[in-house]
Image 1 (cartoon, rainbow, N blue to C red):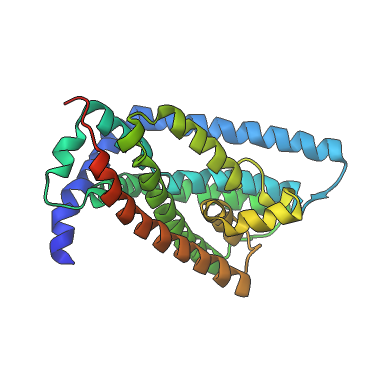
Image 2: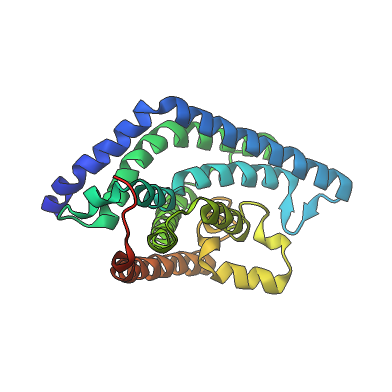
Length: 272
């Protein structure tokens, strides 16, 4: 284990350096996401006002505000660029340099993203959690922070990130065949955003669709961690959804191994 860590530590450092080197790009990306949060807030505020109802599908307006900003935090923490990176490396031919090295192709992406994720967590998680809890305190008149729910939220985010990473790796292997993934990646992001509850809470869907979507891996990306943080999953239901996340982690990990062995046979380097 120690030997493996030494081998992949340079990739962790590369991910950290990438974040600090291109910090203007990172800052503008975060600003864009925050603006998206406020757009969602005003849309939902209008929905609640027009509905003349304090509770909609299990959410009050204060809970919806918390949901919106927790969704932003969670989406940032679990984000993974594996699909884009694989597509670009196949397009420009730089994948040739990565696959000739005597190390795991998937692991190089994983450890590089972990370096990037470390910097993101250090910068974002404290101010955003404090902000979310301040909003909850203002709306309810008391401190709502629950250390157990927070720790389970972090565990759930770890599972969610691994699901997202291996899913994106699996999807990225399509580039070995179709060569360019920009359009397919945009379509994938829209579909996953809806199925994961990032667009609207899954509880707003018809009961049958909600039950189906909760079993699919996409609900494990955003919806499950957010619901755990908000205390809407507890006890047996929390254990069930965490176990479901672990199941999807192992499923996509195994699938990524299988697809790598199949996809590498179809690789055609275009550039380089």
